[in-house]
Length: 243
Ligand SMILES: NC(=O)c1ccc[n+]([C@@H]2O[C@H](COP(=O)([O-])OP(=O)(O)OC[C@H]3O[C@@H](n4cnc5c(N)ncnc54)[C@H](OP(=O)(O)O)[C@@H]3O)[C@@H](O)[C@H]2O)c1
Picture 1 (cartoon, rainbow, N blue to C red):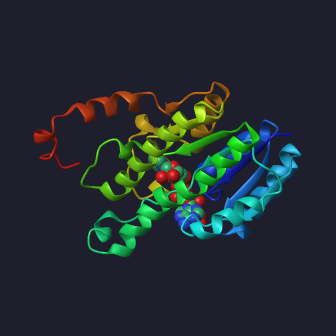
Picture 2 (picture 1 turned 180 degrees about the vertical axis):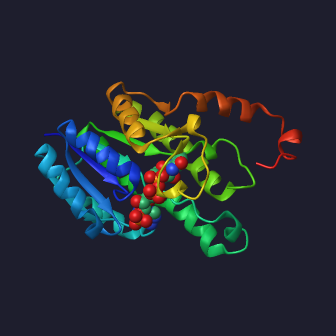
């Protein structure tokens, strides 16, 4: 049976992805900081879909532990989905380096550290799929979240370069731009219904995009056009906006 590794498995999107992949016959490796919280999901997956799921301690902020984490997996995953992320507190991060650094470490350094290892393993076995969940916040810096946005911008550029490198090895790299999603991360933010997806909707879109070997997806198509407009605003006007 093919296997999928989900990094950041306690997130709402990851739970929906685990259900989607489980219902499609994948065995699942669930990786998160606190694996105890994953036990109900593990039981649910086994009862519903009769698949094997294993639990693994993983902390994006501890790159020194990533090689040992990856080599401890029971098998090499066919698909790796990097879901974890940290929105953080923009206001706090403006004056508190610890918060600012954490945003960078989780969303960029941690993701690059683990995906470098996954990428090299894919090259060695001559196959594999890598999925990275980035953010449209990375497409243009705004005053309300430019630490998170710039870390995601770096991650998007990383995935683009990785796709270019691994294309020649027949390994698929998918970048996901979810737009707004109803999750724990956004529970205190009022979100416009038309532009906001549910975790299940995101999981379905990712599953389809893996099957079609897409390069980049905007989960709700409207976001592609919104970002096109936002990116085309001249800088002398953009800097005056309160975004
Ligand atoms: N929600 C949105 O509107 C939206 C929009 C665009 C992109 N995204 C991206 O989508 C992805 C999933 O986010 P979500 O909305 O599902 O949010 P979420 O439910 O808050 O999930 C964030 C996940 O990241 C994990 N995480 C944070 N720091 C970590 C670390 N140091 N090591 C390992 N895991 C860590 C959290 O683990 P714990 O449970 O241990 O805290 C949690 O599982 C993220 O990459 C996010 O940036 C979200």
